[in-house]
Image 1: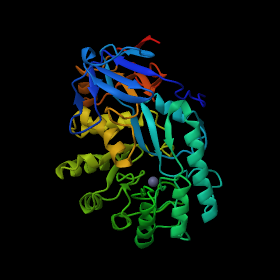
Image 2: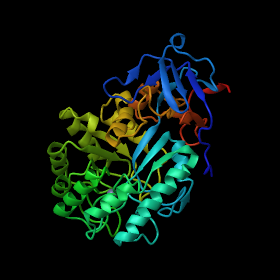
Image 3: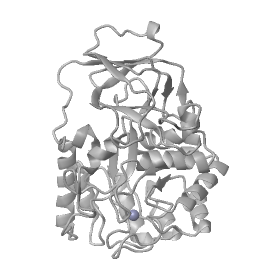
Length: 398
Ligand SMILES: [Zn+2]
């Protein structure tokens, strides 16, 4: 396993040239008129036509061979435990496999599969701080795993949230997976979390595995978390009228997950579109889980929503990149000067009937990944997991 992925050392300059299609990740302008991206020391410094940008002194040059460059994909809902291992399906190397599905950043919705997970306040705080530290240091394959997401319990007091924030914890695990399942208590604790800069999410819908519970629209709206976690259920979704009630009753993020109800995901998408609120849609896998581990889960969601939800593919990619980055206040997810140089380079899969990569996704196919880059460093070349890309980029200079 590539546990000790190289970090950027010394000055570096990455040039990606000969880009056929540049997806920005931003819904207001999803396609950029540029064929070259330059990144120095892990940050994007220039985007434009080759003749207009300074490519001199590159330490790495990638010829995109006319393929598509997009921001690295963000999985807004994962359940990591320790290292690149998940006990839920007893699988090794799952994070590295997701990198081969284009995912360069992951957000923990709680390290709930930890064997013997402590539920007392001191224990759950210690575990959250440990997970935050461990995953920030580890980065399997280079993937940025934002972990350390405690699952709240009724005995917690405001001081606990202040202490967690001071220790570097920035996320809450899904509200509802612990002892707090009622609206008033959830609302009080979510507000404490927000006061100290900790983002929150909630388990929406029926129980996911024995031991978790039902969280309906009334509790979701009262808790007022920053993200409505898996609004399409994990896997059991709420009735459509309750989903609509949530969409209309708040302005928070609407997270659609792979390990949820696909029909409900499409219902949510249609509702958000009717409201002119597609910028609230973000994507996750909710894995590892009982439904398994999906290295291509985010790509599959992009393709599902584009093909069956009638969303242009370039917009569906924004759900998995810029929308999530903005909602989660991440420094990646957009092709923009100053952003983290995290990219996925893709092409139409071999033998897809689509005329272009975007057309192929709108027809329900997955793109083929030819390269991933994190912090300006090439992490993988041709994906071992996607269907093979028609054309793949090449490293032409070091
Ligand atoms: Zn859940």
